[in-house]
Image 1 (cartoon, one colour):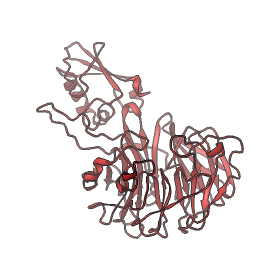
Image 2 (tube, helix red, strand yellow):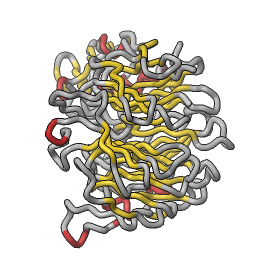
Image 3 (cartoon, each protein chain N blue to C red):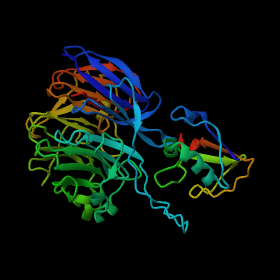
Image 4 (cartoon, each protein chain N blue to C red):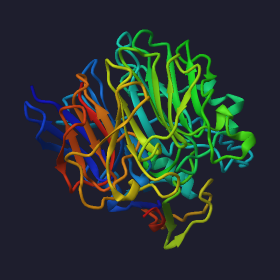
Length: 368
Length: 89
């Protein structure tokens, strides 16, 4: 049976459909050509699709398709509360406005039509009407610790990962760059930092283990074992087996532990994939050899996967949402900043190039 | 009444025909436009009601400086031109 996936890029949204053996993929539609699409979500509960646009000059917008991409309509956009005071004209020039919708997630099977959105500059938003309207989660936004959050690659901090526990949709775990990992057990009424054990070697010694300044580039958990988390952190790979109560750093991963993307098998919490690069500001493949790394044993050992990936020098970087695994756990899709798109049907043993000519890829997602 | 003109590039994303509206300042004129076209507001102003960072507004050829309150005075015969700034890429 074929698979379908959405690919969000710097210059539009593209739909790809596979052959039955999942080794060949064809572009089947496009939308928003010329517009930056920062995030996409295909909601498995009602088959609605969502695309977050960043128009640059004209701001951030959100669109929804009720017919699997045939047509799109603009819907509500997460908005930060106004701090304007028209009486004294003494307004706060630093008051926040939505800079980017960085992630979108369905809130749980027991909450049809309910969505979560993570944004830059760091607000979490909630919609209970399929995105027509949004409310800022005030309890997280008003946390005192938020004042210490920092931008990670952007001027302001942002929420890029929202993990909804499939056992309990009130249980949320967020990844914040740079603000660590935050979790709620009560649907967002209260929050606690859950980055204990994460380390930021690039910070002054006194701050390296401060949970509130950590930069987890991407946080994911296993659908079948939701207490098992993986984080591709700025400082390397981190792993948690206790519902993010503690994190263990996995060191000495070849060719590098640095990267942005991570995907975990939906049924096997020990099986995860990463796309390594040269650490910190360089951000190209180590020795220009583009590879994927895979662990099958919970991070004890790693394999380097390169069959089907470029054999010549390559400078691709895979952003944090640029790697996805399908519901079977066998197929992965990976898109790069260089506009290359690859797929594998055997967990990464053999990769197949789908396109070399896309715009820079921000997000790939299987329709599950 | 002042005439409000939007760049063609914006019309690609949201309906924004040239309009004549009442108003003694840029803010008043734009608010009159947005009152009839709520969706358009978010393309020109940010969450705080400020002119978006990479937008510009000119009144009779002069770029306004008060990007927050948009208090610049407009005349009955003025043309308010809303465009994107090259700073946005």
